[in-house]
Length: 525
Ligand SMILES: Nc1nc2c(c(=O)[nH]1)N[C@H]1C(S)=C(S)[C@@H](COP(=O)(O)O)O[C@H]1N2
Ligand SMILES: [Mo]
Image 1 (tube, protein in one colour):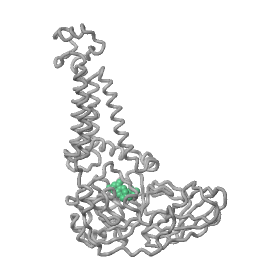
Image 2 (cartoon, helix red, strand yellow):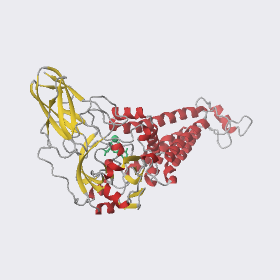
Image 3 (spheres, protein in one colour):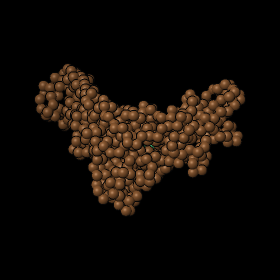
Image 4 (cartoon, helix red, strand yellow):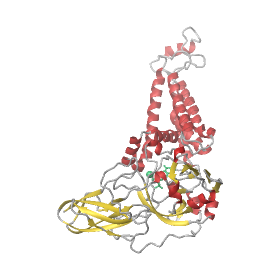
């Protein structure tokens, strides 16, 4: 209960003052310190559930630790207090050294300090109510104490062998006080968490949705009539914001107020720029369909999506800032301190690299980087798609290392040519006769030229491609075949416009993206 009160009031302090929540702070440190394989495993096997599972794990660990402290406290109250202090110190340490949304270092650790104080004082009060003195030797009074013993202990005054210490009345176990104290602590914990949840944390969703984005000066190219294949179960050509995959390292999604948002453009530039949200909206906006892919996507995996973005061309900002000779990279930083390194060339070679403010007709959703994120066609997200961006530094790759590259991922990571079977689903049962397979293929900034399907390891047969919307955008395909009874394996491969055929060589996502061919087994009745 004492630990719960500490965490609850720490949570409330974080909501009120804006510091790092103890649970989120420790969880974030665990994310950052986790060895690469552990993280890969979580991304692969837990998906987006990894975050609630991590938070649940932290809470469970605290609960177990606090229970042990409580049990130990029966015999050794000072050890119990020591353990409680350690718990608080962990929260402070995590906040002080980890990524945090709070800039001010004092504000940052404040919730941890509150957690330490509340939990320790709470533990002290519980122990006292339980009848234990903290000074001198541990008491032996409670539970089995006979009325005589109690009377002796309380009436005897400070005689030799006094076990009570001076501050305490050695009145043994005060059940009422004990229950009231534990109940009050529990209520403080629950109340703190509840209050922190109803407090407005940053800007709210109504404010976000109320933002009117100007009509972009350069609209997206009209989509050809046949970009979408008419097959049930195929990934929609445009991925809705709700079903767009999400990959990041944040336990609580930042709700940055656009009125306070600022992007600093600096480093190897002639003129440092500071852009606020209104500045961005006043610039020339472009609207583009761009397909995003995560480097963690396994062959056939779900971490790919296509959206219609609105944003400011990064090249135009760089031109205005004046890039100095020798620079070859940009280090961008999000509001929580995560860094991403992007090749300068990909931002200036004419492709549609943007500071995006809109996604599928609305301001960026909080989950996807509100108010501003980067979108760069052709590069995996971890080297290009900085969400909640606040800092943009022109620099050289040799002068910095970014968050993911510190964790064993490649410094440069163009998206590999890939394809996926959406229909039929694995182990689907279908009727014999004419059948259809369908899916998507992508090779951003090179474009998809051909998709082929193989049935049971037979010859490669060309699939029908949907119309091409652009080289930065995925392309749908369909394949008609004659299904005969029995189990069959369908395999797909794509070829991009450079002539590169998708490799069959299997590679894990680390260090620079998975490779290999997606296949699906169908059962024909
Ligand atoms: N601030 C921040 N930006 C980030 C990340 C992150 O962890 N933090 N993850 C990147 C990765 S790995 C990918 S694949 C894309 C995913 O963008 P989405 O969540 O909008 O799909 O965002 C990128 N931008
Ligand atoms: Mo990613």
